[in-house]
Length: 153
Image (cartoon, rainbow, N blue to C red; front, side, top):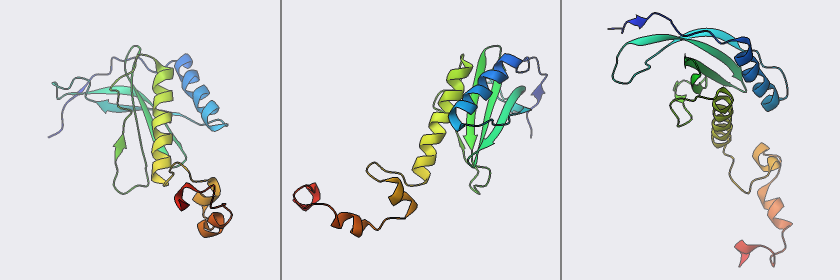
């Protein structure tokens, strides 16, 4: 049984809020990222099963989809997901709601970037060449002086 959706009384994203998000995206990715206005149904109060239609900004970049829902005046919720992932997991930032839109955008971009690195197997100590598979680890290790290699001791 679907929960009833409350009438949308939350104001849409204004031009200044869209500019804040789009400027942060341009800074992060180095090019203009198109955002789309949408509405999402959000359970604003955990104890209340009803859903509220919330204005939402949506964009996709680097294989991830991002959502920022406006939960009220100066209140924002965010998450990201991978549209092509058959598991269809959704990932948050660890914080339920933000009162600062720029902090909200920065947090979801940071968490997704960390998650992207983890998904690609990035671990401390690996070079970009190693991650791309363009270097043979044995060849690399052969260039290391055994005196300087802590693993050789």
